[in-house]
Length: 457
Image (tube, rainbow, N blue to C red; front, side, top):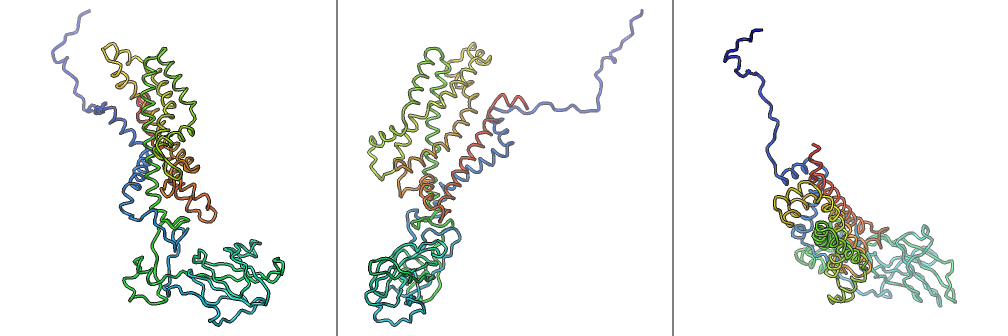
């Protein structure tokens, strides 16, 4: 068989009209690739935005909303968001002389009525007086016919008038006058009146609060607007927005600084124990077990004594020291388990053969592959630290009034949650948002930093 005749033209490359496809992408560093993956996670990015907003809220917010968190607005105590701020300009308070004032009594069995319009300065009541008869006067925020109770007993009287000046606020009050028997028992002669109390302010008070420019401009009956509190006030009349900002500084400082400190300590301890292994590992982990068994509350009391924190003083630094010293074993165990698994990998052995030192191998190869576990641990420890601060504040060992914190504000708000729910709702909402944001961000960071998940793309 004769071999075919070949020419140089037969060895020319084929010309293709289809351009070749680019099958590679630009090289990315470990952190650049992790950031790219994180940006592709919408929940993680939304959580990162929430955390940035919270940090700006507690750091920049006080400069924008310059209200003293401890200042009391006694005319607006316990009001909710959007409450009526109107106030009427009235004459200064004058002593009441009921004997010199003629009053027309109401047509009821006791003649019980108002002597003059009820204001937040005073509610002045008069009634028919019978010789030798005593009366008991009650005040209630709710209709006694609905609650079955007259409410707060104000006084037991043997005269025909009474002036109420006890913590009056704008709104409706129910006053009940009860005639008593000679032995002090109550009779069936009872009259209840619902009285609308109007919020008023004197010209001097209005000038002091900046509601008017001068007393010459003041006219009795003039309608004014009190200071604006966007989120209302608490049970002492303090601005809720300002307290949430300053309280967030305390809560986030404790919630971020303490976990970062004791997780870092646990990472160093656990990585050394896991890398060395053997008897050293066992001895180090038995010491960690001993630390776990130490009572946190007892050490908190001990550190308060050492720091000289007395009753009624905030124990923020003893709390931080106790958390850092006693809470590092949990992250240390997690990191140790990861290091024990990673040190058997081939790339670790290759690094050792190439002359890598222990510090280089742990810091360059092992710890980056445990970042997912470390970050998830931090995200769980942040809400735990905030809840620990709330518990210690509740028992009087954490943040003490008047210093605000979200946990302390929740403990104060739970006492009046039925009548003033906003005092509990707003700090609890911020704590919930913080916890959710850190958890979602931690999940996103774990996925972005996990080298094994990058290979599945």
